[in-house]
Amino acid sequence: MRTIQGVGVSAGIAIGTVRVLAAADHAVERRVIDDPQAEMDRFRAARDMAVAQLRRLRDNVAAEFGENKAELFDAHRLMLQDPDYAGCVEGLIAQDKVNAEFAVKSVAEQFAAMFAAMDSSTMQARAADVEDVSRRVMNVLQGKRDSTAQDGSIQGDAVQNGTVQNGIAQNGESHIIFAQDLAPSETAQLDRAKVLGLVTAKGSANSHTAILARTMGLPAITGIGDAFDPTDDGHVAVIDGASGVVFVDPDEATLTECQRRKAEAEEHLSLLPKLKGKPTETKSGQRVHLYANISRPSDVAAVLANDAEGIGLFRSEFLYLEREDWPTEEFQFDAYRQVAQEMGDRPVIIRTLDIGADKQVDYFNLDHEDNPALGYRAIRICLTRPEIFKVQLRALLRASAYGNIAIMLPMITSVQEVRDAKRILEEAKSELRGEHTDFNESIQIGVMIETPASVIMADELAAEVDFFSIGTNDLTQYTLACDRQTPSLERFADPHSPAVLRMIQMTIEAAHRHGIWCGICGELGADLSLTDTFLCLGIDELSVSPTSVLPLRNVIRNH
Image 1: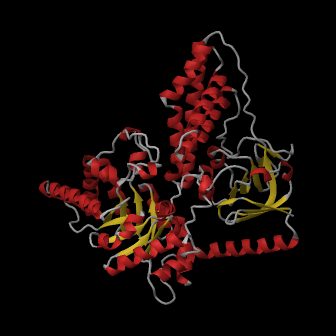
Image 2: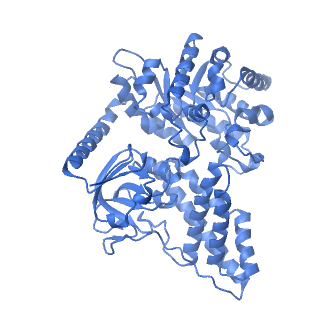
Image 3: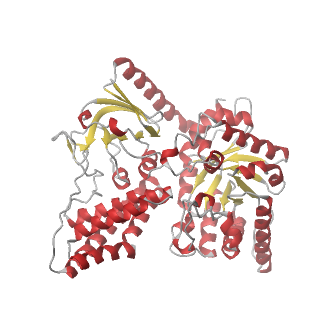
């Protein structure tokens, strides 16, 4: 038995035969061409075909996993259609009289190097994206099979010829895929009926591939590095996506124990649907509100299917991120009203615009920042550009006449910020009254507690608002001074740190001293290892991804 330690990025245990995907051959020959215009036309046709493939891939992912999981491929499509990208490729063809394949590969390398050299980890991640979309164009130019084939298989041959074709076994068996790396487009097209789990030499917990693996319910481990061994192909392996451990050729005791744990987990999952309609309360009668996080109106279906009691975080910035120009008041109103109506009497907490840091929108024309996580973002944009903020607040107020909507302010660091936001809200209310437009006069307003400053000022903030919701992702980042977008800092950015947990405790206590409720809407809310701790601290609400609702309800009811 060989034991390998990687980074667990998608929980679950998989047991099966290994299939190793060889790295695809992206070699491109440089050729001198006689007709640059014809070669540019050839590039444009290949690019258009690649865009069409991405649209099909995006629609497939949206249909199976939801609109929010498909947004990555919208970004890939826009990257291919970027005039700067196309201009560089065509300029190289015209200037050096080289073939389109070589020009695409050269520009991809240039752009990837530029992104990789940036300080922002978000921008660094775009290096992989530009390489992914460029490979797609090169494949079209070279006449290779469309990687978005309808059978869901991916490109790349296994080490042992004859057992695997295009990365998927032909004998009907399911396998654990080992690879140096997987592009997001490759991961999205894996046939879940034939793939048990994923192990890659590269990658991180925050990569697009890791996020897609979690969405697909595939146990996954990244970052095994030099332990990646192509000769493992055909061997039996066990992977634990929670701990990040890989056992190659497990001994009998290890295999038996892992089979037992896997069977227990599967039995546990089969019992979860029975929890629908049951109250979320402990054996001692402690009641907890269990809500879900969403990014767009289409996510409501998953909220209702998983029996969440409300929406604890509607990330309204996605209404901005998915457009090429400012969303109008009417556009936003329609989105908020749709969610409110579909949720009926259940609460819908909508976070106001949280653009900046890792969420950039071109038409905002934000200046470059060396450290955007500490920069011009969220409430800071809204308070300094009130004309943008008021449009959103008017839409939210109008939609509040159709359901149980509450407003939540992100990235708060002071009482004055809350008062300034409330002043703009009152202006919007006054305007709507003058227009004889209905809205909820007593709409609740809350703040996200995600900075150490807001924790320290929690007593004063509680006097200004109706509720707190703790954003544990940013609270961990700012408390521990670790950029959560930087993979190399994962070992230091420990959300279980006593410092972070003490911040959470202080916030809950301050809320209760002032008679308001306090919830958690960050990743820690779904961390079942901390659920008992949060219950003991007296948390009032937990808001998690829709698929985490029933597992969390089960833990709470057994507390």
